[in-house]
Image 1: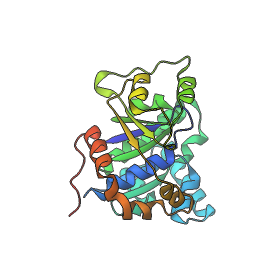
Image 2: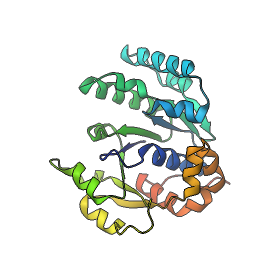
Image 3: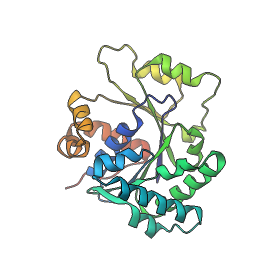
Image 4: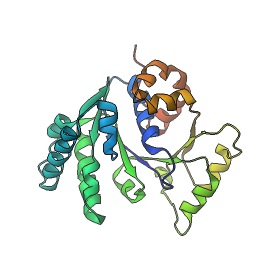
Length: 240
């Protein structure tokens, strides 16, 4: 199953939300999953790769994808183990292309990823039109009604009834009056999930130890995991 993550405002903290939820999900799963990011800095940030290594991997992947030679096994070979149950693929090379060609290239990548992994957590950036290639869509949203309304100006987010997205709402400020209930009125959704991040989590993100934090603390988010697992269709049993 491919789960696409999009941020229509550019302020929804997509990368941190995506990494965190994929990390939590992997802790409860016996299968192998894949996290696809469009942010090249994250490969160096989390994995300690040299810039030369990261650049070479991106160039090789781009060549294989453009030539239609990317097999599921090759994609696995270029992915890196991020934590138990979760591999990482730097797909920032896709953004070297433009328009429909970029979309076709990314769809090809997602197709190959979906053939080889249990769940694929895919970064769609702000390009919500790419959601046609995913099974489930998560919209990462900021705690700002003004930002959401600005992003929705002049566009209509309409989804088929069976393909309503999950709204992932990060409660960054405890005194905000922008609640999940009000948020749900702005965009039709299958569900609304709120991740009440602590400053400790953001410290871990800034220090490059987010995934270590997830390993230690994931039990604190069991309710959120179950809500997310229900959205994607049942999820996984917790590891023994």
